[in-house]
Amino acid sequence: MGILEGKNILVAGVTLDTSIGFHTARIAQLEGANVIVSNFGRAMSLTRRVIRKLDPEPVLLEVDVTNQDHLAGLEAALREHVDHLDGVVHAIAFANPETALGGGFLTTPWPDVSTALQVSAYSLSSLTMACKPLFAETASVVGFDFDATVAWPVYDWMGVAKAALESTSRYLARYLGPEGVRVNLVSAGPLDTLAKKAIPGSDQFNGLWAERAPLGWDAKDITPAAKAAVALLSDWFPKTTGEMIHVDGGMQKMGA
Image 1 (cartoon, rainbow, N blue to C red):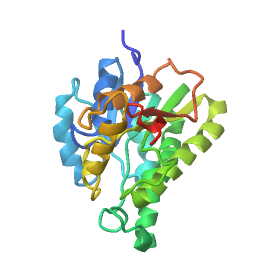
Image 2: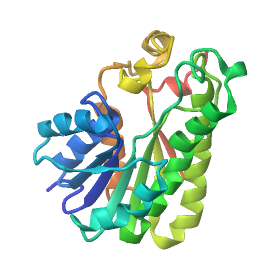
Image 3: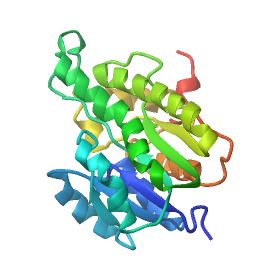
Image 4: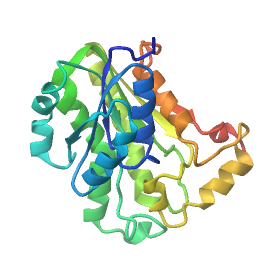
């Protein structure tokens, strides 16, 4: 019996089989979960193809976290397939690579900053609240982070958005904890996902981690980060909330 046996989990943000969301869904299924996935727009066609690799093939819902109609209709859409939710995985982030990433921090226009903050940070709250009516007596919300306690080269406004994500998770933990909802983040090292490849100059992170992570780091191996998310979704962390769990080979704890 797996650690998610009988649990209903929504994984928001599954695009390719190199995405953190995909591997979280895969491992959650292996651990017994009934998984529903979401994406939106043109990416839906990619998601439909990739989830055929999962067994059983999960239900796919269209959820654009910037679309209030999608969020308002999410409860009803989910109730067509499950009577409750035990967990939500937030694997969603976006910033315009041409203006908000790659070294252009000082000249990024507000509309692009606003989009990065809404999609990458505020959506943790808006998605959670859209799902909240379906939460069981206890529930777990897990998001994915790239530690924003420092300023990284080329990460720019996504770094600011991740800092906002970290703060958002703590406030959600504060306000939803009394209702049995845990909210935590997994801070992974650099992974060769579609999102990372869109960041100009992001390959320099791989060399940094290879040099400094005491446990070593393979940017193509997404399983460790996904396993951490699945563990947080399970009942094995019943009193952990507002935390940021590092899955980065130990690099964040090493000095220069």
